[in-house]
Image 1 (cartoon, rainbow, N blue to C red):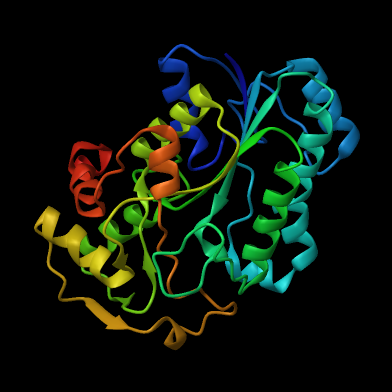
Image 2 (tube, rainbow, N blue to C red):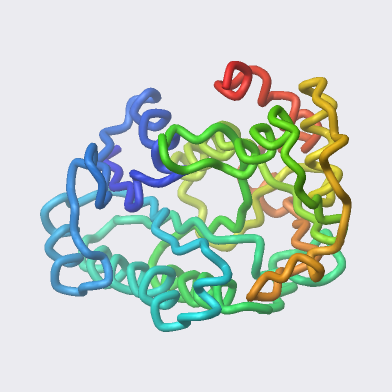
Length: 288
């Protein structure tokens, strides 16, 4: 299939684009940095429509997002411009091409209740979550799969670390940091997420789906499990609550997701989080 990946130069895109190309898809990478096939400002309606008309993708995978939660809270308009308007503009362009399909990557931060949260258990607790949810509403105006997810794994970008990169660097260098005991998630490894996005492309099942692993962990338990897998000391790690960190924006506490709807619709069994963490040793983290 001819697939447009918007935000292909970002953390997930630099892994997803070669993965999808490797399984035979014709990939057109959109991005602002070097290495993209096309570039345009997706906050501008006219240039986005022109991009869609030029590329004519059968499927678009939208990865464009502003994930800095504190900055989103400080500047809600910019958060809207990055997290909502690009989806609105893509949908406006793609709806004019019969048969086109959108895969919108959203976030687990739309949840903040005792989990695992089903898809209808929305609680929008910060501006980032609000603008990502608004992007979901825009995506739902055309045939689309909306995936609420969270991920970790080795970054391929020289100047941007993933969360697991940051954790491993701190553990290896005995850098002191606080591991939050009150923030719970069930993320996937980037490679598993790419595989599931590939399945979503194949199936084109419309709807909103949670996409994560089994066996949610607090951030602290996640960090200590990484340390166990790699045989690294946790002497420099302090356990604490997120509210003590002095962060500008509120962080949801329990973002763990019930992913049964995805497993049933796409006929897959998602992995355990513990196994996903163990899989890091087979990635480039092993020699980082």
